[in-house]
Figure 1 (cartoon, one colour):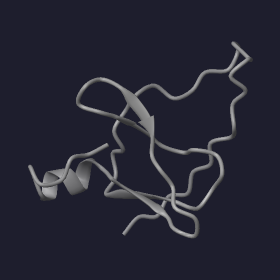
Figure 2 (figure 1 turned 60 degrees about the horizontal axis):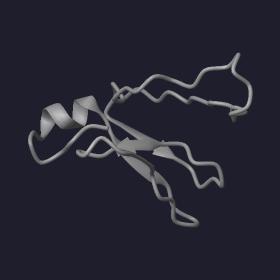
Figure 3 (figure 1 turned 90 degrees about the vertical axis):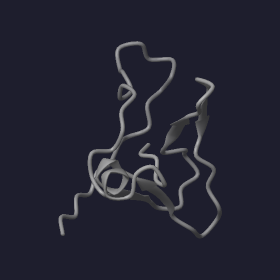
Figure 4 (figure 1 turned 180 degrees about the vertical axis):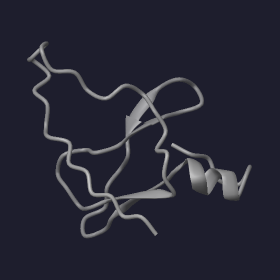
Length: 79
């Protein structure tokens, strides 16, 4: 099992010199996002609209990655 910790700092939308990550799927098995007031994951819906992953106080957001999708197609969609 590989555990990788990442931290993405809050980006000021007004500052045009800093860019967000480009749209991508997570290459790993899954990503756990801890409870946080700042949204940490956006989801591309089938209609092409982006939404922030909803958070629930005191819970983690679990994001299934590419490896999980490959293990259980088509029941799991990677994001």
